[in-house]
Image (cartoon, rainbow, N blue to C red; front, side, top):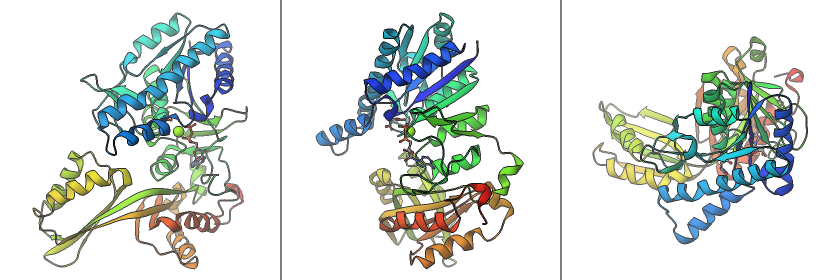
Length: 411
Ligand code: ADP
Ligand code: ASP
Ligand code: MG
């Protein structure tokens, strides 16, 4: 029996009517002969609410307890989903992450999946049941509940699709596909029919919250086509898939902003072997995810080192660099907590020139100062002041004609 994984995001299970609507999609797939595995997120804004509840009691809650709390949002959704299907005459069974042995590492609030026991799900599918799995959560090897990071239910879905050998993985959400930019921020963004894993991974890693980055990594590694589509209409969405030669014809496919970033600079570190390793070993031990590392030699004796982090990691990162400061003979530490990053992404950049110039000129004309610049083969990112981030996104989208369908762009 062919298996399909269908993931429903928070807005798609927000109330009883939405759950019934989602259940109808599931039933349609069952009637089409699929074994269906559903992954559900917490309802509506419930994860935000749980975080607020925690912060009301403790401004710096222990991460293990945070995961214990946050995982309950998804648990509610899956049991309600199973009840809805039962009321509609279909046999369903819900599982938490721990019940399907979704084993992760112990990095609470941003754990990574290590293995999944697909057997229990297969057994239930073989018995004719619809299996509903709580997204976003797992357990570590000491049976502590972990969560995968905000938006992590996407990763649960794609990882399950890989573990089960599913034929399809559908991500049902509140937009009808992947757009050239977040349509909430850039109103005239255009929808893509398909996008390569590499571009989507860069977009997701640099702020396009529509997909969790790890989900794309799993999709690419295990060759899972991911169909991102609307839970409220039947239209075809966007397929995330392997790159095909035509994709290179589009120079810039999308633009993103990542707000809520902080920058840490270590000024005047001793320019000797091993110092960068020491700094990043401390940050890794503190489980801080680091982006956009820049090191520059300023003299034969000294170097400056800077990097960006998510603002939520700032307390841990600050503590880590304070600890290592003297050991690397750092003259001063420089911290900014008002950084955002604007990025343009496209596989076509590999074979076209002038992209950087166009981006920097657009920002210059809008009088937006660029704090730092980083690039990959298919991405250019500029760190800017947080207050100017949305304006920066707007001017960059216009400069690359992201308001037009890809085939009509002249840049
Ligand atoms: P879900 O709860 O279904 O997982 P999310 O809120 O995580 O939904 O993701 C959907 C949202 O992602 C959209 O409402 C949209 O505002 C945002 N988004 C950001 N970038 C993009 C993009 N490039 N294309 C489509 N949506 C995007
Ligand atoms: N409920 C979690 C969140 O809001 C996970 C998810 O929705 O994917 O981030
Ligand atoms: Mg999401």
